[in-house]
Amino acid sequence: MKSGVMAGALGFVFLGLIYILTRGRGMGFGDVKLIFVIGLIIGWPNIIPAVFLSFFIGAIIGLALVGIGRKNIKEALPFGPFLFLGGLISALWGAQIINWYLSLFF
Image (cartoon, rainbow, N blue to C red; front, top):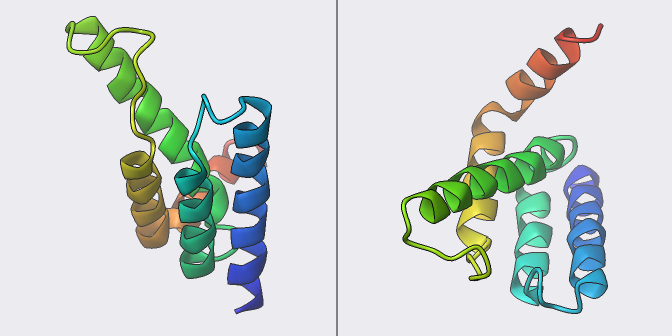
């Protein structure tokens, strides 16, 4: 359980800093609370690929939506579904993703 508390706290602090620095315009506080819960569930170190995948998948889908004209570049895109998807992928394959990534360098 300590692993989950640490992961939740780190995710909360990371996204909380984004929330504070953007004054709530870049990310809502619901996203900050959601990453805390995801961290409690998936633990450390799976929170790292969860956050990375959330941003990566969100960027790809956001760019695709802008590319096909469904969204404007200035329109907000809800981040919660991407946090959930990143957390789910990381819960299922987080260790394999981390091992694959580390094998690229070591």
